[in-house]
Length: 364
Image (cartoon, rainbow, N blue to C red; front, side):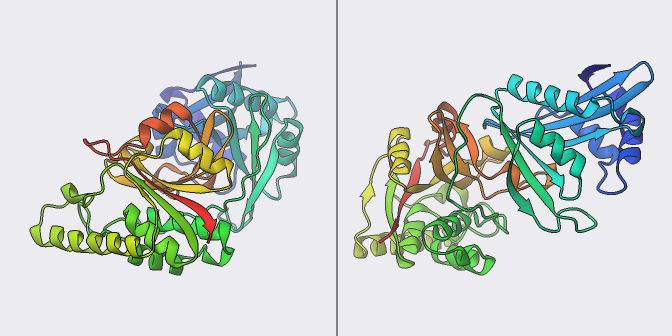
């Protein structure tokens, strides 16, 4: 047996293997074609003289230390030959070669053989998804540290934004879920937080949140926020051309700033440096941080993430945006380890390199 990278000429064999190995939730021919050539994915095949015995497909989230074992399959004719174990080891090596130190996966809760393989290989269970597969079977989530580092346990629950424009609100959902109650991990609260912190308009459609609005909303519901921003003028005006919409944005943000003064919320007119964020996390705080969507998912839009952990080399983020179009799940967006130097690079938005963060110190 040998393991190598898949090529487009393997797609027919991969589709045949997929159909033989699985009765549902199969990867389509179109998806194989896209994933085999995608730079943020790697597909490995194990073969012998008779053809392909199995494959493993790994996804890499841009700018992070995370890889995900998206799929692994073994041909029925290769059962018992150690193909699954060999592919899993090759996937780990591939992840390390992409400078990833953490590998995650999902597995059917009733797949005892696969679960035993992962446990023997040193994976630990980190969660469970209800109704994950087409037949409504739950999935178990596992992860493995690929380098000799201690497992960290993070207290902040993950919440996926339900719209394209509520990333800031979803970060507030997560902060409220950590410091107040899990009852706030709910779409009703997400929309309420968005209504109370939004800039009203953006490039097109609904607007996103801005730091003063997020701080006001956090304060209103009992949290203790602190604002860091490099530009205290009205933000994101350059994303809207219509004069009337710009005026509405100015009025909304002027109101936020007045309410910040009334609530005596501290405002720092400089960036929250990496050391500031790390120090806040060390004290049990978290930070809603503005990042460039271009670095996270290829779109030039402002985007909010929640920084809530620090492992000594990475800031740990919850990114509320899960890109369904490229088969992401919450495993790809929760507890993302972002290297310090990359974190410093992505926390700048636009030509002016705007930097903004709202540090949440917990309940007042």
